[in-house]
Image (cartoon, rainbow, N blue to C red):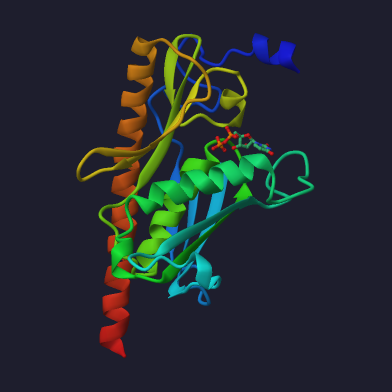
Length: 249
Ligand code: UDP
């Protein structure tokens, strides 16, 4: 399999990727707010073949009172993958090291953005589940969580928009899919607060020269800005729909 992959032509002589995209092109994005009625907020986010749902509960009383903070809310996050989300059926959907790491990354990202001081002694719970995985699930989870938090009416300093970029055979590529991610090159997921251009999260799973890193990071930032446009349009559409349906009642 590794031999087959090393012979794969990730970028054609015409400069196109295996799925027909140009190097700086995102996969198609679809998203929707308020997909579940029982959670305080929820959302669906799809980027190419990566599909994720998010649900938010809270602010609510802290279940374990010893963990309550007197001056702010605590944020909990649980990332899981459906057992049918990957090519090989997963035996465990959560609780493995990777899920724990991604849950922590999402929690830390939102802790810096949610105005937690408004809700002392409370907790806000974010649940994200990957329905179908094809690379970039942590970024898709952050985007889904942003929409679900907005749907729940949780005050945030800004949108959190996430996108990864990588590099194969010296060409920086935006938004790697699973085959591209499996090529073994660097993959740099980044979360951006678009208004202030602040980086809320950045990870790097391999070493790369500083010039390459700068190119890859710039590409990931452009991806985040494009995703911000899609998310804000969807929020606007949802808000208009709410205003119209309330006016009719
Ligand atoms: N993946 C998988 N099974 C797993 C974990 C990951 O098939 O148990 C695939 C999935 O498509 C995922 C990709 O590997 O999107 C890359 O995983 P990584 O840990 O780099 O995180 P991601 O890119 O999803 O944020």
